[in-house]
Length: 543
Image 1 (cartoon, rainbow, N blue to C red):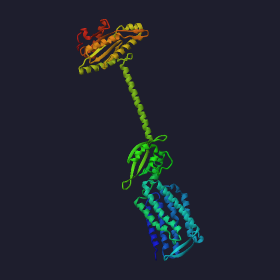
Image 2 (tube, rainbow, N blue to C red):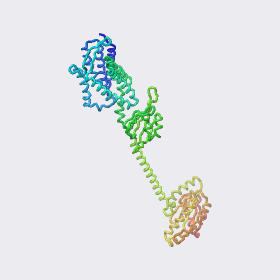
Image 3 (cartoon, rainbow, N blue to C red):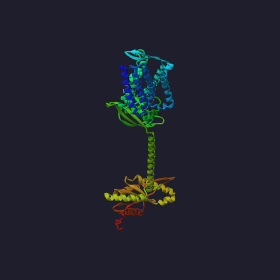
Image 4 (tube, helix red, strand yellow):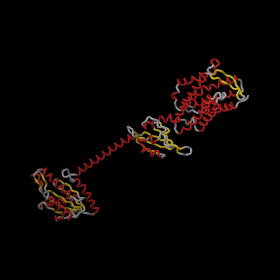
């Protein structure tokens, strides 16, 4: 039996398609079943087409040609099913649609097999000689043209789906789409060329002869670039449903992939595919420019939407097999809720700090109230007793004297009896103001009780203390306190005692100053005496 070279080509093509079909069948990814069946029926088409170029009787050629027509009828529909599955349009593969898609192939096959009764598929059939071989020559019937138009329409829809998927795919799947389109377009290009040059080709059909090339391309894709292992499942089933915004840029910062979450972040419905990222981010370009110009980055951005949204951005560089930068992967995570919680915590912390400051101020006020005389705002007796102990202890360590000046207003009761207690309060406040003005830094003046006052003068000699007391006495003598239509005046008696000469404890030094003050009153008032001037012996521990 003689074999035409076309028969050998067709047989090899069938074998390659069958191998690719088995390879695809072993995968479980979406579209693998449809692809495997499509390659199987391409193998049937190509395998039975071999008989057309074999030296066998016409009846045998017709029998095998009718079997070949199974592949001719089914392959376009299976190609569409594969495209729908691969591009994740499975929602369109309903039972109703599958039934509708099966109608035309079944009708075409039945009309082919029953052609002698109606001649719709072909009107005549005869054997003719071509290059020393007997081949079948068909005269096309009306259904043949209908079948060709329908098949090309189905194939065009499938190609459209794949082209759209390729445009939307990221760099990871771009090579896969290229090989799919290449492996799919060769047979249909051959078929179109055959249909338009049918007479010149003497019945030669180029489509089944190219099936082997398509099968080899699909087998290479499955085995080498992990086609059917790394098909765009992640993009449609994971990335499309992610709450994180995903953006893929090429090496020129053009957007090649974007998911719905990122579209919502950008607050725009139009497609950004193919646009430059600077244009997409034009409202916040001042922040994104260093991000897009860099490589690995992590930062936070505020999107000026209404209301504002905060995003955590991670930028990862994408490299090819030669470690050349060919793009960037940007993942945006919405952290608005976290920022709102942080803001509330910050506001709560600020309120807490404000409360703490307020509490501190209240505590200071309470402490001041506890150690201050409310009428004169001088320190009170409690503060004097607490502070004088510390001051004497420090003076003992550093060996310096401390002078105490105790004073009492002369005839203060007469002021109260003549002008009233309110006038006495005015006089006490005026005295306190004068004491404060003439005190050194480090001195402290106290209201000891009633009209008695004490000034503590650390690190000062008795002579200096006496001179300061005299200056104070003279200032008070010239003091006129306005009260209504009256001008109040007074004099003051003072007693001075020094540590450690006149006493080494608080009680003793205060008692010494008190004795000196009462001695000054006894001497005629408006007078100053030191404890040493009394001629009294120094106090001893036994006193």
